[in-house]
Image (cartoon, rainbow, N blue to C red):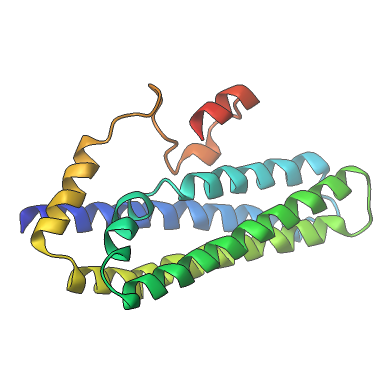
Length: 190
């Protein structure tokens, strides 16, 4: 029972960290929106890359790597919810791609594009928030109901035994706030 509790607490702690970073990103985006007319390309680009790095690290969460694969095998209820969560993530990814295209237009001096970039980035955050809410309100209660103590033990054991990939640790959720890395270094992390 203690390992089940450990796994659940680890997931909740990670969720809280993700929410904190997401809130900081939303504040950055709101600041860009307030000053969109005066926000330069460098500010938009910086905010976009913080969001992109956050989004990229989102798929390395414990819930993604360990809990969802364990749940998917149980029943249609779990599979349906997981598919809906993945659909929300897919939409966030599409919006991130849209923001990237809009950012390129902003680089070429296209009119009100800064507002559009900010709005797209805000929608990415909205979808991530929606996913986090559904994970907390629907997925975790479902997991607590469906997974046995042995399943939770296996999940907790995987948490504890994770080895850094390629000698590098996966980005933590503070990563978007670290200095930018070169493309080669960034691709080694993802």
